[in-house]
Length: 323
Image (cartoon, rainbow, N blue to C red; front, side, top):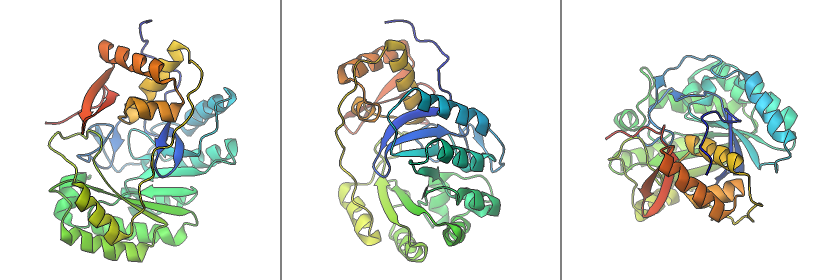
């Protein structure tokens, strides 16, 4: 196998990845680095490098949209959604509105979604820009201050009640769909007090969809673990959460040239730990070719394999794990 080169064709576009809520989602990375307003102990992309609430053009909208235009010109199969996310909190990018509008112009039949940890809901201008999207997927894991601080490790000055109120304010100006996500970590935010507070909050917010999930991939802290199945189902029932979608099979593509295969897999794993099967489903890869490429990337040290409840997960060697 040819030696992997460091420079990749796409710096800010990754995937598509399979999403239970959005289908085949083409990711746009608006930060280019682990820049976030939180340092969640379960984060899939690794420990936050810069924790900030300062909005700035971390990645210029022009650069992102140039890559998206090139991706489209290559004749790729259109995704089910274009999703702003990546290595950090996308709402920190002060040019987010231009990215949303530009993506819609380039792919008018594809909804634009934004993943957010909800902290920028405290900023009126950020809320207004975010309202340009078609789907917003905010998270709010706990309304108990001690749990919120322990699980999400936000920048100083961010509290759960303020975030919740920001979400309510956002819902009043947003005409699209809100898919709220709550992630449970065993022994951290799975208390009855948190459940009761979130029940009351969801009645106020009235999101279009609620997802209650737990850890399925390695986070940034090794000691962080998932809640058991019965507890997860109890929460889902109490919050009238959506039933997780079953994995959809996709026909594999023809053999992809080796450099392109390496590029696709490395870009995807830098943003999200995945199994080989998830890579195959999302990217339309040949399973045998994908496994060989991943094995070689592991051998070269670009990718690390970890056990995820008996299923091997792979992530970029840039993914930082705390003890």
